[in-house]
Amino acid sequence: MEENTVELFDYFRVIWKRKILIIVVTLVCIVVGVVVVVMKSRVKLPVTYRAIAVVKIGQKVVLTQPSGASSPVVYIESPGNLAESIPLKYGVSIKETPGYHLAIKQVGQLSMLELTLTGPDRGVERALKEMVDMLVGEHRRKTKVSLVVYTNYIKKLEADVEMFEENIAVINASINEIKRRERMYLEKMVTAGTETKEEERRSNPSSFLNMLYLRAIDRERDLSKSRERLRNTQYQLIVHHTTIGSFEEHNTEMIGEIKTTVVKPGKDTGHTIIVAGVAGLIMSLFIAFF
Picture 1: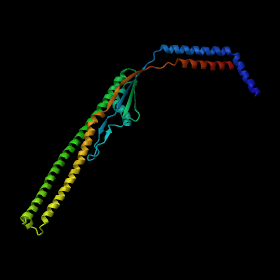
Picture 2: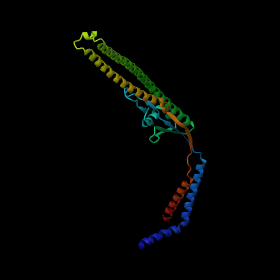
Picture 3: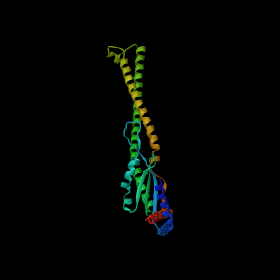
Picture 4: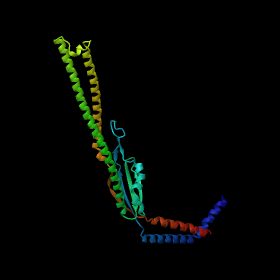
């Protein structure tokens, strides 16, 4: 303990003895740091321009099951795939421009992408707008094609509804005719007590009535199936008309306007002076002990 204390006092004694040297060297280094800061301030450093655009991904209709009750509405492309494909498909001119850098990220869990283009001039805004316009144009063409297919499918369903309604009308007329013949046959049996020509060709007097009854049952079964198909098709039409009615609101579009900012390089003068002072202090202590 005594030896360590003596050595520590020796260090302090050396520092106190060489204090002028330490102060002078430290001050010289601080002055050098100030000179460096002044020289950097006179140099005009290049600025960076940054343009930011937010794009909402549109949707399209995919008829995976034409006979289903509804058609799925899906995004034209997933945000993850778009983040990788946009630079390859639409960023050719940006890659050819030196100093331009494109960054794409998804906005949270939403179907939105934030596109950031940085470069040495104000052309970043124009280049980013051209790329976004190309993306929006292609997506809207895909949406339009899917809507054409979707509209044709709706027209087919409407034609099916008309066909079912006509079939139902025909079946109803057939059932009414069978019932009319039953009534006429019964009236003749009650009033005249004679047999019709159809009965004369049969051994059983009630066979004609049984035939009419079975035919009426078959037609009513057909009527029930046609009505069920008509209800299902009408329900599909309601769902599809509702979907296509609000579908125009889900096109790919840019949210707001492109925001352009100027990023100037920072001048950390305080940090430079502090580093110079610390370096001078360490150098002076080394010289003093040496």
